[in-house]
Length: 250
Image (cartoon, rainbow, N blue to C red; front, side, top):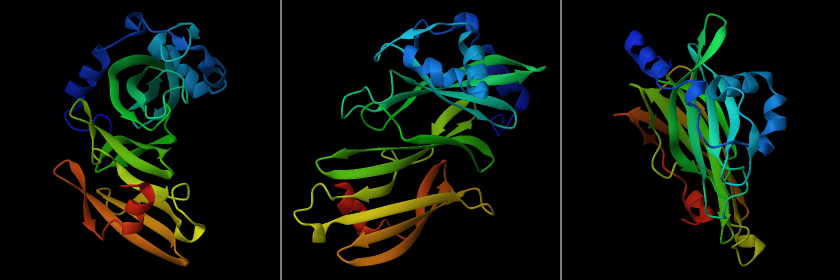
């Protein structure tokens, strides 16, 4: 849960941190107005965090609300700096997470985790979801890009723990999909990898990744398991298929 641990102390820490009156001086992105207003839950979270701030910014000089997540005890607003897809090729999306507390039928801004990660390319991620890992509320994020003909996506997981938002995955994430079609000299050398992942419902510390590999005319499936140990997800079963490394370019 988001309030995992000493409830009263952590809840107070998250609530005191901010209010709409203390909202960021950076404007909300004008391009976000339509998608935010079209989704009631997201719009309510934005109003709780920013008050009646205008959607008047552009480029990388604005804040773009991406998603709002509902957990058992609070909501979380996921944002990025700048408009998605408008960054340079090698630039990731600078992500922030704002906690929104539900109080007496209303919403109140809480702690802000500003620029807790920079992920993806072209200033954009692929998608994000609310999940639970070992009793902690968490955010799972997929991001990726194409570099010199190699395309890859990676999974990153961040958990709310001890008043902080901590990264559980390795620094470069866990590689998922990959292909080298743009770099292969001929079609026969192309490698395609598609992955799916889930946290074991019987063991919330275990992340299971299934790889479907299509390489040089042969197809197979391999499974690996990452387990939470010492506050980090560690590969404990199987190995990362060599094709994943080759297709992703490294």
